Length: 526
Picture 1 (cartoon, helix red, strand yellow):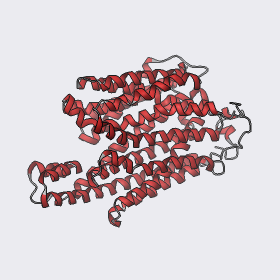
Picture 2 (picture 1 turned 60 degrees about the horizontal axis):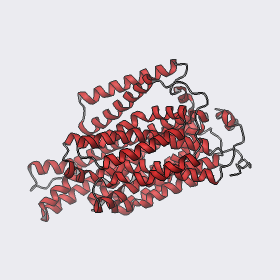
Picture 3 (picture 1 turned 30 degrees about the vertical axis):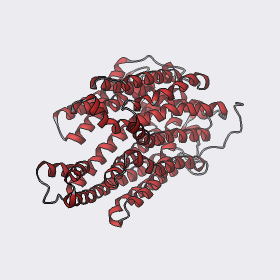
Picture 4 (picture 1 turned 45 degrees about the vertical axis):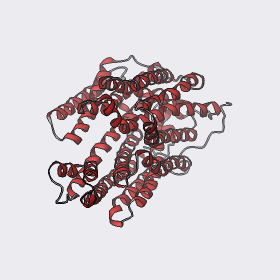
């Protein structure tokens, strides 16, 4: 890539002087934040309601697992098809369909009389959620044409995911303390009604000016690919090597190869896989993937630490995570003016190195004896870097493709994010568990099934310690907490490695992208 060419050679469709966004566009951003918040909240809030759901609906163990897993499986499988369909029928239109469906199905989920009903509702939420995620990001590409304003809008958009991750435990904990379990699904309805009214008034309906036909075979192939691979990763990380997950992985990968071959041979592909030849596009996706793995792994471990080691309720644990999430938002906003003077690749690499430093602090928690204070401080450090990376990586993903392909690019970005979620929970969760199991020491008085349960997970040890009580219970809890902290250190080292790899990829692929060109003076007049 030519270092002196500027954006006009890296992204040839940005030659025209862009219009500046006015009040209407910023109000549109506020409306677009509603579905972003809902998707993020929905990713976490169900976990806290599972005990209440179990008492009310009495699901089997398999049904309980599917209540949790069916949502991300359907969501991951449909992100790319829904992004491509949005490019064809219009992103505002598919967003309206997604919001309407999400509201209706949320009401049905809240009133579920049986486990099968709730599982089907969660699948429906995954389907309509797949319409929301790519549409919100791709609309930003077409609403905010000025690069600096677009980056600010993406920083706000990314902060919605961080805010939702914190609000999920806080809001879910409050509702479950005062209302029935279905109230966690009813959150969507009062939020989505004003969005449905204001979206047609404030958000323009952009789409690909020269779309190809919808290809059902391509949709089927990418769905089987995503569902097969995501399911296999989840199963392999929780149940180990088995015939079913290996078969699912092979089928998923095989369908993925067929999908790519079909796109390359089609005159009008559903997804232009040649986008991956653009190093800016591919490098930015790799950044998103690596930082998501590390971030999700930390949130998983830190939330368990706060609740099981420190003894906080889910709601109070969420409150303690607010400072780190606020720093994530700050990192995104600080990155926007930085790239006017510094190359984006340098800023993103620096953000990933900040992430690595934060996780390295986590790894030394037990050695330094600082506990919660050091973990919260490390969250501030890598939260700042995480915000900068996500804002700039998503901006470069959108900027590296023509505006008409924004939906497909956004869908690929969101799919990468979902894969990062799965890999973070699977890989770093496995490292955390393995570290705990290798370090935990079960007191002599704990035997049989109790010893086995305490040796598997910290949650099992907490249950056994509470049942035992007295000195024996306290000794078990002390040993288990120390072992969990040791496992946390191994997971933090894994996250450090992930961020260092991401920084190397960023430097190799994005270092030649120039700083933002001169800021245009034209105004939209809005």
